[in-house]
Image (cartoon, rainbow, N blue to C red; front, top):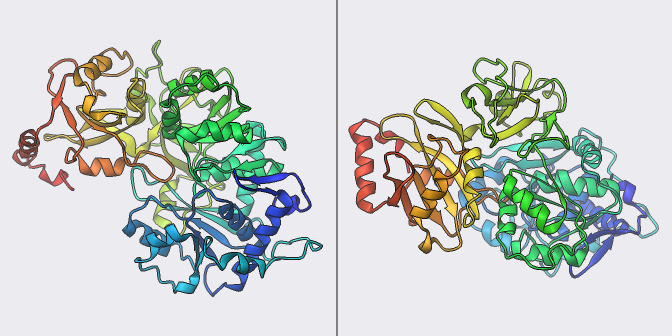
Length: 550
């Protein structure tokens, strides 16, 4: 796809400060690819990139593609120990970063000498690139060893509910995704693609960069070099953006910004993303006038859903083929069709909600890097198991119900954290939320919710309880027993709430925590230090203190 852009004088990459034609993008990429080849050592040809959304990230993607190297996107939101472990795990022999990134890496034991780091803002960096440029009269070419099976990307999963894994993606698979997404979401050469999601994540690479490259569209990078709710509209208007990608939390932040009279005065046509609440989707369409494709996807990439304009609110569409199903992960039996009430609430969740699988997806899954155990968990009975919960209604529409790790079992009944989160996001003060299981002193789980609001000090627990009581699609077992109120929830680098961190902290946090004291409907009061001590003593009295891990 990149070689197809040689000689293309249309705009390829834009920032507020500089533009590059596609031909220039290819040449910048080729220079970096040649530099990488000159620095190559024995072992996996893996290049770690720790950068925000800057042009050099795109040029190194292209350079790796031409050189036959593999890009491992490094997530800057990881803690020091995780950062060190992930970089070493994927066998990076070269790291591209900047001065800020180098500060994060300087004290880590990465097994690399100083000459294995390239800083894009170093005074001598541009000269090193210039040494490897080809003449304007010579067309850049890919290394002869490159073919469709060449490993191109190692994409770390978000790690919201568990340890992250490095997903393998070949050049061939990314190319197939580029053309499939072109057909599915209407990409065309005239598009102006606004890339505000992080480039180390599959959302930006698979749904925007690859289709943009395949079609010769223009890719624009945010002024803030990452997603900014306040910078979204100014950037979209400056570039004349027609397409963008999102994740649910980012869209929630955007919809929490004050509405302006000129919001609809933009060129946006389409957006693609995952896990946005139906309310945020509807409000975005009303406010900005663009169509949103709320899809289903993962870095592993073996799930498949067909869009259907007749799909009800909250549905992903229809299974793309007969091999897409929702099954009981223990018995492998198909789950019953979901019966929905007038509010879209599932009336038979224990029967209907199961794991989404693709009976034909094993061949599309390229595996995790150096993780045979995780590979085996994904491929069982000859089927690809997504690790995601879902259900199919009586009309044949399929719905996403959260990650498998989001299953919460209360009083012997299963409930989906995602479905509770969608209810909580309706509250006008809630910007973002994460719902997760915490242990019950006697048995099973209790539901805890962390909500992000602009002003935690003015949170009104009585008003919040009244709001929950008025939600017809919030089951009695689903109302949170604990509510943590924060001005800033922890997130992954791809803007997803980091629930495993919240879950580990339980109620042991400096944020205000409210707990359920009512016997019928929701009723909350602040959880004091004395309350926390007494509650933890209840675990000891029932022999369950082992569940109170820090």
